[in-house]
Length: 601
Image (cartoon, rainbow, N blue to C red):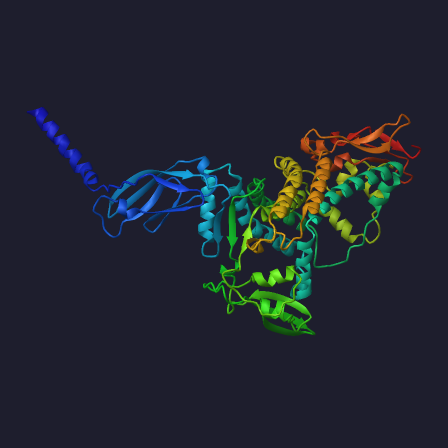
């Protein structure tokens, strides 16, 4: 009897404690789904709820890709999804204390050959688009297109941020020319009419730096007195009692480091792309709330409020972006522009495809601009390649600013600002032995000057500059192949890296290819365990020449943590009898450099 009572009591307790959830569960059964890459799958979830529920039922995603829009499950499939298909999705339903979970799979088929997936980007869809791309990269972590598009979305704001940094730390930017129509249009024409300039300028820049290094080495070895001349002379600095350089460099470097870290995320994404894209992004520039008035007015022109000055008189005027500035060439009354801001009373239209198309074709613009649904741009691998070059350039520049401590000591800066004449070398020669060595230079300028700012990160930053440079030839060819492919078809009028805007043919492609190959050869000097660079500077009668192993700077960056430690000792600096190098190998970057050099050599 006691056992029966115990069993009955146990059953009663289970029902009392857990029965409520058993009888209040929501039953949801969602069948497996099939979709093709590039298609959007929308599932009305209410139809798969098999229990009695109220109108207040809600859904959420417990795991898996996709998003919930009201009572719909939405999954945007993109090219590349089929490689990791199927995807498992768990959807939770809840209603007045009741809940349920359904699990289903999404099978994705490859996009038909020759087809592309399109994504529309506007102000209304920007947040949704960002979520779609993040979701796509999460489920396809090695997909290059997903990373590249996500990087492109972040690239423009980060590149514009660089202007803010320079503006805040170096001084106000001169914007006086921003209202000049001829300058704007001329810049645009130059940009789109010389596609090979990018590779040529990069190649020429590297050549020039190597040549400059070679010439400087030769001059110093043959005329050692140039070192002391450079040390003891400087350009005059304009006196400004309200300004001190002390601390400013540190602040600037810290801001540049934060900026570089943000830009690194962009680079890590955008550098994935190395081939043709099957995802095309259409950007509807006029469908963003540029004037931030809460309403998107895509058919009304953006209005700028311009404040200018002339002879202490301030003028405040409104200009329509196209009708007044670009079409009628109106200019402010003042000769100095104080500020330019967006006027919220205007619209949000900032792009007229017909206007820029006529400019690119050299046609006269006779009609006022009009804005419609045809005003959009296409982003493909050509635009990504250009963004990759811009981001790589900005990132490497930012990293170069942050690797070494560029802040001299406060004592040095006070001396430097107070000295009217040239620096007197005896001020550096603290032990008065007639020589100047690295330790004395460091004591004079600052012991941390030109040392790694961050011992753990600076070596990585130094090596990353090489990694960015090594990407240039491949990126150049990615752009070239896109230019050759994007011919003058009607659809390519929306593509700024098409032959409508950038004249390009097989000869231009061959030129870019040749430049890229030459650049590859130059980059061999800095590749891991790369080639030696013979400066052809003789050092002895046997014909030995100085060899530069530039790759060691990046292969072993820890050996270059203190650049002033390489500063040569100037023997009897007043007569400059000779130079003695504390490390003639310069950390392994130089071969065959003598330990010392006298004027007789």
